View 1: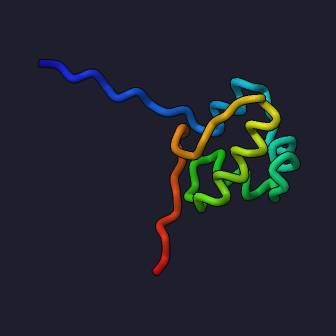
View 2 (view 1 turned 60 degrees about the vertical axis):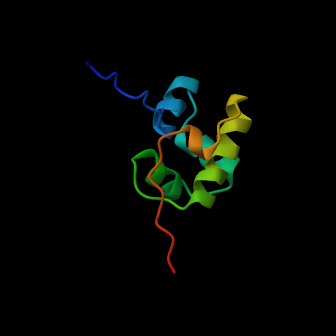
Length: 80
């Protein structure tokens, strides 16, 4: 029996391309430094809070309602 591959979630980069949102525009809307936005766009680990802030800015620009769990994102491990 053949298993179907799990549906892959879109990355923030793919969403920005789909909605034609530039890095600097997203940085301004999220009130974040462009290098922090770049980290998430290229797949570096980010905190859940940072991913949430970026998605809030993205959702405002794109008129969407994505949540952190809806997209493919590398989250930092919590430190004890």
